[in-house]
Length: 107
Image (cartoon, rainbow, N blue to C red):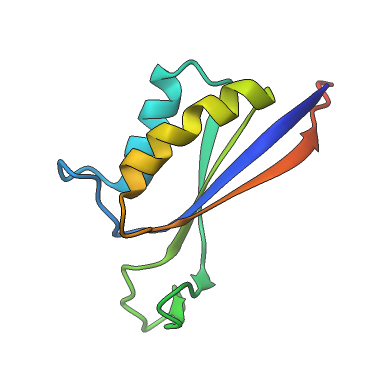
């Protein structure tokens, strides 16, 4: 089955408007929207628009590690969720959203 993979890259300390972590809010909104599933992956090192490298190495106290929220579902359902992400990420463009065609194999 062909599907669309939506990946949202944000910082671990990014917050939604009411104080909940942004990645958590994305997952809960995806659940409410009836999407097939969502997973959050915490990076151990990375950098984004700020060009500052954040790392989880020993002796580092970084709280701004990269986080990726991955959602896979049928293309119309994923595209229908994009306005929700626009609202959550706001006009300042926090985060990066990518879309990739993918093939789902259920074993």
